[in-house]
Length: 408
Ligand code: FSX
Image (cartoon, rainbow, N blue to C red; front, top):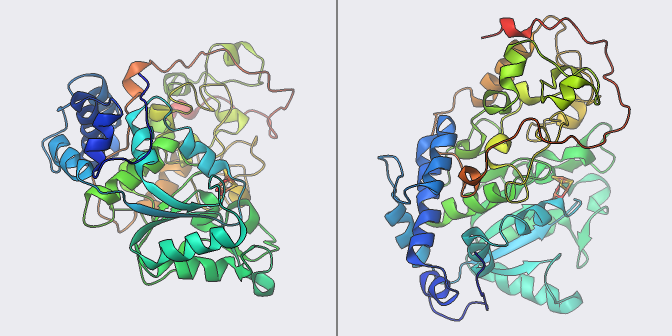
C-alpha cells in the first residue's frame, strides 16, 4: 500500500498519518511489531515477525504494548532530528531511506523533522550552517553517520570550517538521545582499519557524558535504524545494549542461529566454490569465509530492500560488518573461520562464534526485543535463491573436512 504524504501539516504524528491515509489498524500493526520486537528479545525474532503478519495486537505480555507505543508515537509533535554525516560513504542514509517506500516506517521517518542532513537537505553553505545552529539550539535527537578523524587537527573532515569533532560536540550538547549509525560512527570502520591514517574514531570515543546507542553495520538495516529511533521516541531511556553499545533488541542473535542454510551446515553440506552444486542448493557458506557464526544481526529475518534478499540469501558469505573491527579481524573475507588473523587455529565455527558473542554480551543484562519486522512474515526466506554471478574467487584456504556438524 502506498500513502500520499505531504509533509507535516497537522499537530501530531497520528493526525498526519491519518491524513496520509494510514489506517489506525496499519499504524497499530506497525506499533504491535515494535512492541513485539522490543519485548521479545533475540529469541523472539520470528515471534515478532509473525506478529506483523497476523494479529496486530499480538505483542507478548510485556510493556509497552502496541497501544502504548501507538499512543506515544501518535502524540509526537514533530520531533527534531539533527543527522550528521561525517567520514563515511553515505550508505547508511541510503539504507535508512530505503527502509520503507511503501511502509508506515517510511512515513514515520518522513514525519520526523530532520532539520539538518547534508545528503538530503536543500540548503547549502551559510544557509545550511544556520539551519544546523538553530536545530542544535533546541532539544533534538542526534543521529551520526561516519567516523571522526582526530589526526592533524581533524583536517580530513570539516564542515563549515569546523572539524568533525567540533561539529559533533556542538550537536551533542542539547541532544536528548544520540545514535551512532553505521560501523564508521560506531568504531571507525574501514577508515580506522590499520594503519588508520586519519585517526578515525567512533562517536562514543568523543561523547562520554551521554549514552550513545550504536546501530552497527556497514550499513545497518534500515528497519533497525527506524526501530531504534522509534524506541527512543517511545521510551524514557535508551534500549539495553551489549558491551559494544548495540541495542539488544536488534543485535542479540547470531546470524548463524537463524540462517536458512543452517540445516545444511549441521548436515555437513558446504559450498566449496561459488558455482558448484552446493551453491545452487543453498548449502552452508562456511568454507567460503562466512562470518555468520561470529556475527550478531537481524539480517536473516529482516533482510534488505524491503525483505527482497540479503547477502547470504544471495549466495555470498557474511563479512561480519556489525562486529567491531571487522575489517581488520575478518579479512581476508573469503578465508574461513577461524583461520583468519586474530583467531586460534583450533577453534571450530561454533566455538569461535559463541566465544565472540559471549564476549560482546558479558556483564550486560539481557533485554527483550528485536526490531521492526513488518515485512518479515510476508515472504519466506529462500536459501536456494538464484545465486548471483560472483566470479571465480576461491576460498583462501583449502576446504577442511565437513565436520562442523559436531557442534551444538
Ligand atoms: Fe560507514 Fe555509513 Fe559503511 Fe558507508 O554513513 S558504515 S562506510 S555503508 O555510509 O558510515
